Image 1 (cartoon, rainbow, N blue to C red):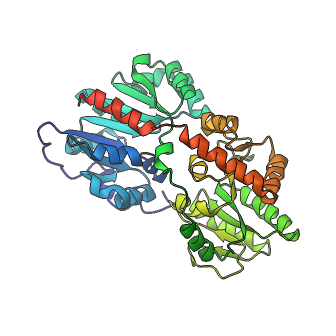
Image 2 (tube, one colour; image 1 turned 180 degrees about the vertical axis):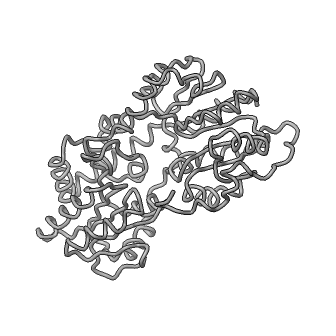
Image 3 (cartoon, helix red, strand yellow; image 1 turned 30 degrees about the vertical axis):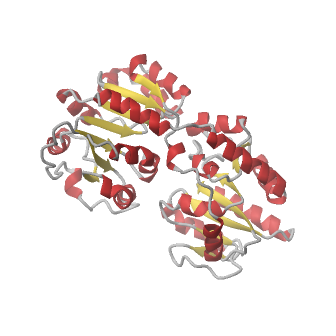
Length: 406
């Protein structure tokens, strides 16, 4: 909260003082959806649009981070009955918000477990959904050990819609009934859109970044500490071989900008920081996109990319679906634990490149930079993988409607 700021906006909502929404229309069900940040809100884009088209459903959307709330308001505000910060999970604040919102169903995105929120639902007999449910190795291990808290974290009125079969097995191991667990696939598949990045948009961004149309663009996607330096060194190596390669860096946390700028200042390559001036001068080599929520709109310029948080000591990985949906050939480091199922399936269909260590990451990125044919092969595999995924949002919508009996 201190690092990112913006939490003072609508602080009363965080204390449970939501505005009273008034009585629901006859036959209308009110759904309260909690999505923490930009990523979670983005992942339910298609679902929100589909729910808003149902005449007998109204939506209240809450969030946690200031960036997530701003994104939700700008993109979906017109579809919502109300939106604002999620109340602190203490009985006084939670009960106040529940009285004001009075939902018929509550939905948590990705696997948030809030005991007081769940208790309020249980006391009122309100169904709880967790959608796009994913438990990391660390979280799953902790939950297995904390069996004494399972009655608080997994109430009887809980339904879980998981992102994969592997996740289904994890929720099953935690003691949930098979009747209350479903598998939809990852909702992010629907949220990224399936239209190819338009050449006119690419040309506009290439000019904005100070690159040339003929440049080969490497993207560092949601990078973490140490990964930017590796990518910069690769670009330096290739440019010494007279290859016109440029680098687009999109760090996972925008507040790391000064750290990344410090690294760039030592590399002797022209660079531009987006928050200082989004338009770079011609001849720029590295473009630092130090903003939040712009990944999908910027990274489509890339000819190939590296998936962040996958190189040690970083661990867990970031979601690879967005760049794959844009047809970007992707090199993934050895640590992708948080997206194990998705990445494994991509590797199986050759839609992304798996590596075992830092040296292999470097080797694969160098090879992709020098082989246009290899990039084309991977791009086609990305498109084919996306076409096979179906619509997780449509499946989730049907499960929700069934629970609401509409």
